[in-house]
Length: 132
Picture 1 (cartoon, one colour):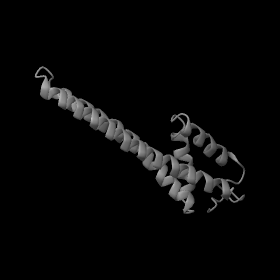
Picture 2 (tube, helix red, strand yellow; picture 1 turned 30 degrees about the vertical axis):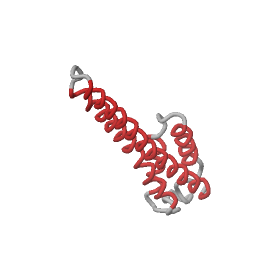
Picture 3 (cartoon, helix red, strand yellow; picture 1 turned 30 degrees about the horizontal axis):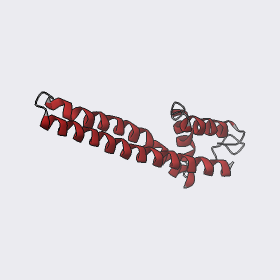
């Protein structure tokens, strides 16, 4: 079971890093969109000032939401790879929370739940939580 938990930790780290890269890409794209609208507003006085801020604000919101969902993946991945006692529970919680993130999050979430449904995955057989 330790091998599966190590693989799950690496998968969580990968999801977290991909999410942070996605955050950066979203911020760049929406910032460029805001600059393009701002440049158009310089040449056309009918474009309202708020229209120049709308793409940047939307990009910040989307980027923030992606980052907020990526950081728990990084924390759970670290906990599982470093064999921390809280990593087991964090992996299960993040696995369940990542189910709606189709397709990668769903696959990793199903894998996490499968690991924790295996006999002896989180206890040592006597009902005592096992340390990784």
